[in-house]
Image 1 (cartoon, rainbow, N blue to C red):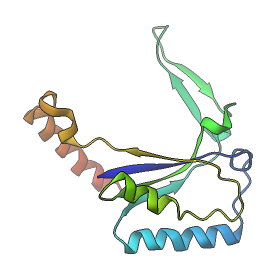
Image 2: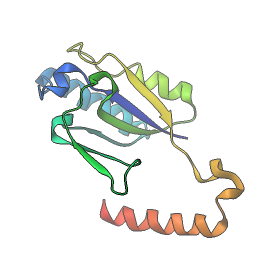
Image 3: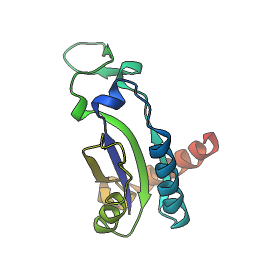
Amino acid sequence: MRFMVIMKASEESESGQLPSTELLTEMGKFNEELVQAGVMLSGEGLQPSSEGARVRFGGTAEPTVLDGPFAETKELVAGFWILQVGSLAEAVEWVKRVPNTDGAHHEIEIRRIFEAEDFGENFTPELREAEEKLRKEAEKNA
């Protein structure tokens, strides 16, 4: 099972305040543990929402583009990991070990990623084949 682990933004991360050397060191060690255990597929930190945009669909013929920053800090994402583990409980155990030396991160969300079999018969063999082809092409871009 794959899970997205979502690090929620804080006032500090949204203001552009960079993590301390101590936190970067601890996070690097934690990421190394994840990789050595074979559970980390990817992980990245994100720039503040002031550097981003939202594209909103609905209500008009054309999508609406909203430039950041966005107001609700507690609803924003500051970083993520993609973990491949055996269960939600295992993902939770890993997340409980995330370094938090600066005390700025207050909430981390864990969400299971859909797998092909989760879509049942709606995900036809033709759609599965097309999806697999796209995944292989995308891997070349990484």
